[in-house]
Length: 113
Ligand SMILES: N=c1c2ncn([C@@H]3O[C@H](COP(=O)(O)OP(=O)(O)OP(=O)(O)O)[C@@H](O)[C@H]3O)c2ncn1[C@@H]1O[C@H](COP(=O)(O)O)[C@@H](O)[C@H]1O
Image (cartoon, rainbow, N blue to C red):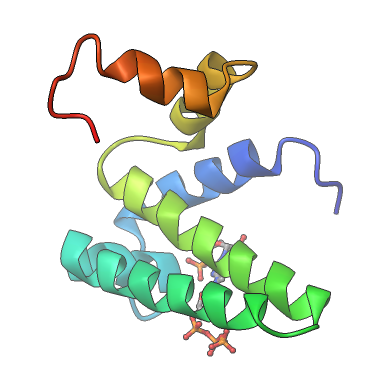
């Protein structure tokens, strides 16, 4: 399958699972567990990414990052959001140095560290 706009197509599939049967759809079972259950899964997947980062197996690392992305997309969907919102935020940040952006935060947020 082409990977063109895969995040958009996956989001459409995840949205359709909102009324899905948890016994037949893994995504529906995640929604049924609520934000706490989805977040716990994200913590687990993030740890698997970190573990894979320490090994010399690129395919395994890609597999684990895909699992993490998938579960964060389910979390966004559970809040009525989708990947396009994150893509828009990354686009907004694009070309802005992370160091400059963080320094600029202090002008409007005195609690920034
Ligand atoms: N992209 C995914 C996707 N990525 C990961 N997963 C599931 O996420 C779970 C990951 O949990 P685990 O880490 O415990 O799984 P694991 O196999 O033990 O993995 P490792 O521990 O070995 O890393 C597995 O059940 C995977 O099948 C996904 N499940 C579904 N999708 C997409 O979502 C669509 C809807 O899926 P259903 O809701 O299941 O119909 C599918 O058509 C896919 O496009």
